[in-house]
Amino acid sequence: MTHSKRRSFKKRVLVTGAAGFIGSHVVDHCLNLGFEVVATDDLSGGFIENVSKEATWIQGDLKDPDFVESLWEGVGYSYVYHMAAYAAEGLSHFIRSYNYQTNLVASMHLINQSVKHSVECFIFASSIAVYGRNQVPMTEDLIPQPEDPYGISKYAVELDLKAAHEMFGLNHVIFRPHNVYGERQNIADKYRNVIGIFMNQVLQGKPMSVFGDGLQTRAFSHVDDVAPLIARAPLTLGAINEVFNIGADTPYTILDLVEAIAKAFAVSPEARHMPERNEVVHAFSNHEKVRKVFNPAPTVSLHEGIARMAKWVEAQGPAVPVEFKNIEILKNLPQGWRV
Image (cartoon, rainbow, N blue to C red):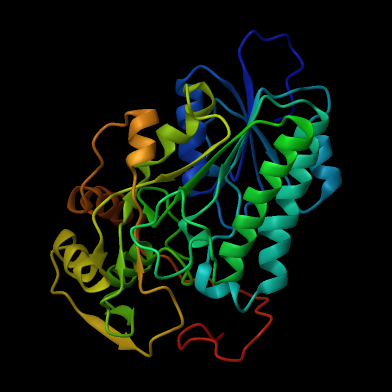
């Protein structure tokens, strides 16, 4: 499908990472808001079947500046929703070049074009990875101290958006989601999305792989707690040029997660403990700011969200874990990640 050049009175918006997990849900909610949606993705981690047929689909790689420029040929966008990224915090240490090209350089190409074409608002999916460790509960007024290349790249984009606003007037809304899970998540990626990894292992009759003692804590966030707010951000009074933590409030240990997933699949909880890896042990954030500005619906409980995702995963069936082909550094690579 190609660009539509017909005259439209709808607001046209661009959603990147639109075939991916969160991005595809953002597309749906943008359509529900009455926007005309152009959806783009390189399909490196997403699936074309995730994209609504009501959206205009364009496949391409945001690392290619010529492709990004071509997205504006004959059209303009009121809003750009930048959801595209490779969000693997742990693996980012070992794929530094890929991480920065995919998550930082590609974002710069998109910001350049948004400035040139006077986009009204740039909505960016950052991450609580920008905070680093020992800053819980994470609040937006803390000074970010990211400890992995993924978090560094996300914070760099945040800073660039601030600079683009000050120099060119490009408005933005920045979200810092965390540990998002739910329907359409890629369960074949063995380097990220622990709930998807665990569910895929259960479907294959394998124990769930736990790094270290499993007492790390995360507040797992169902996609329905995240995507609707992202979609309506540029329409929300008080959101423009602000940063928001977004997601669930209650932290759970990885061992709690093992129990919850086993219950959803009606199997005995079985974990395989592997050597601990270098990661932030406790990561959960405060959401008072987003509640004040967006007045969101109550969040989906972990047990309800896991039950819903488990039903979807069972319908999809198990997936063969996909190996990352271009790991740049093998030193200290965690057990189970070697090809």
